[in-house]
Image (tube, rainbow, N blue to C red):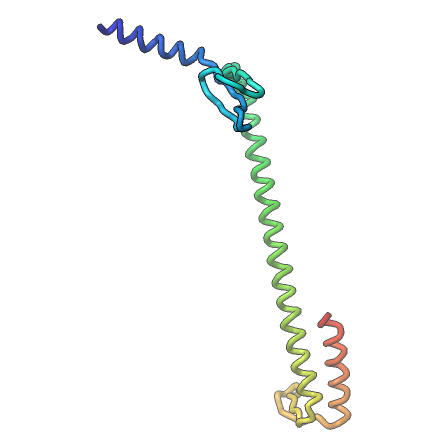
Length: 151
């Protein structure tokens, strides 16, 4: 009984290994793939043969070298990606800082042009009010800052 089961299993395996796969287009122009040959009207019948397993694996030295090369390429790509990310973040921070500086300069210019009394602090931290000439000089300086930083 064991021999019969073993023989039947072996025949099934051999039959499956020798099986062909057919690919064709039927009357409705649909692609059909089957293990049985086409029947009826078909377009473009084609037999697909099973591929042989790959030859012997590469030598261990070649595999080690290939693995080392792949690892080195991976690390290089990883480093380049990190550098690109860092550069993008730095550029984004710089753009945000420029925008903040621009907004601050515009607010200062608006305060100078409002006509209100403007107080400043000197080097000792004491407060003083700007007279008309100082206000004009400060307004001109702030306008130049706005023009150069706010593009």
